Length: 199
Length: 199
Image (cartoon, rainbow over all chains, first blue to last red; front, side, top):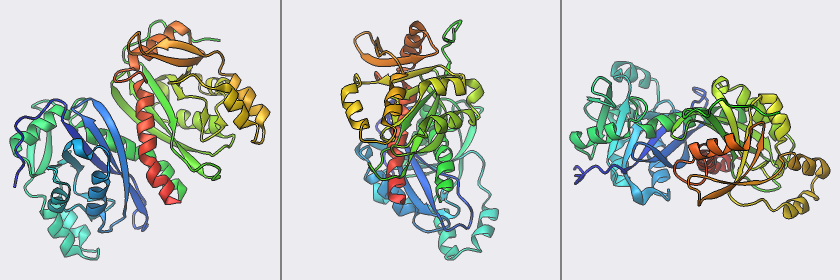
């Protein structure tokens, strides 16, 4: 099932989701930040949740963060910085799509190294489930970003490749990474110091 | 002493500082967020510190946050959302200016009600010191923001009124509040939920 956009509006609302730094194997809660952009320029909102390092609550907590946000009704697309959050707390993109009813674009600067990921996963509980969940994000596609020469890797759920390419291009204002993700990463990094220090 | 800008560059780096929500009289630490903008559009960085509710550490902690940031060398102006942070933890703008060597623009949407503030202060320890510190920010000036018809209130330290007006106009992209402060407020609000929940 794919949502068909009649047109990708210049002011389309996109939420970008990224996680903060954390201490590995710490059993701590990791902040996850969602940043709402209107098109490629205007920051309209910031939301936050927490997930467990190497836990299994990323999908539910991110879905809940988005659905309880006052921006939910305006949102048209979710962008994720990969599908692994807080270590190997995997986002089930199919479930997130069904739960939020929003199409998803998973973005990566580098092509994910699945052999290495599968290896790392094998040491965790529910490793089979985690591995199957990672695979749900589907084929990795290389697409142009701001310019034809700048390429990023995406996986898509509920949106056509043509539409996803338009959304990427429209929101990649200052780098090859779309603004909602670039800024979510900056905020998540910025708050990491006080979060880790606080514990 | 006033810094004289030869020109206010279109890409001037400004850090806007605002605090998160907190539980009054809680003796808790309140996150304070600094957001670096390049001109009125591009978010370049997010920094964070903590201060004590109704404490006296706002000046030192904000100065230290700014000076230890990788953006410090690029910064030209500090914008504060008022001088009271985390309740009545007052920023000594003279000390902040001397410590950071950066001019300061204190911004308020509404004209501060000093009678009410002085009354509230009187119940706190070191109330005389707090009141004198508030007064250090000097005269309140009404200036135009994005448009001539949109007015905000500012206090300035180490910068001429003419230069401060240019910086305000240049950075007020989407509302009467300059972007570094509008976004700092959004981030501080966004992270409040997990910070308060965490304790």
